[in-house]
Length: 264
Image (cartoon, rainbow, N blue to C red; front, side, top):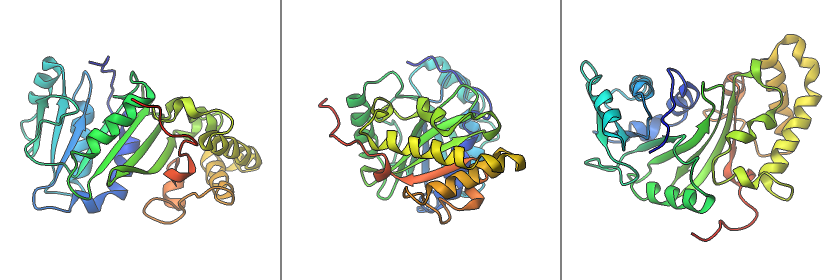
């Protein structure tokens, strides 16, 4: 069991991204199911997850899963008036009646080592419906900085960096929120280190745009970064509409470890 620290709107950035980019899987079945794994001490972020995703997939059912019985009970107390929302006790085995089309697992792998995190990815991907998506990542305590990976067909496909730009010193400040599979790879010789170093240089070059606000500076920095890194520049994953939200998404190849994961 984790500490379960959470707060309202802590996961709004990743929810907004999921709603914009994963509508296909969320609408792909007659009874699509999404799982919020390890929602923490309060079920508020699961209720928000349900509300935001049902706006783009009205038939979607959402199950919040936690290992602590009191946390499950707190969620069940909020189910009234939320058709298609439920809470169950469990963990990575995903105690649901059918494979989910999407699993959100946020801030649940921080206490794992790198090898265990890779195994968790493999196990969760193996429980998805065909074409399903696992979104795994971390954020700070109030959701101002976050990094997440989207996995499909058993492999990581994209990585997204997101921040409240008014409080961001430089892009590499997001390194502390890298997923467990990458956080110890932020060293010279690894792609993620090179990416963040490039991003910091672009951020510095874009400093004159600060007179128009941090959003303008971020957009310019991302545009500059796209000249040397494979930034996704087209909707739904990229382009100014997403960058102005303080996001940037790249293919996993931009950060993939230079050496194989450690043996588990």
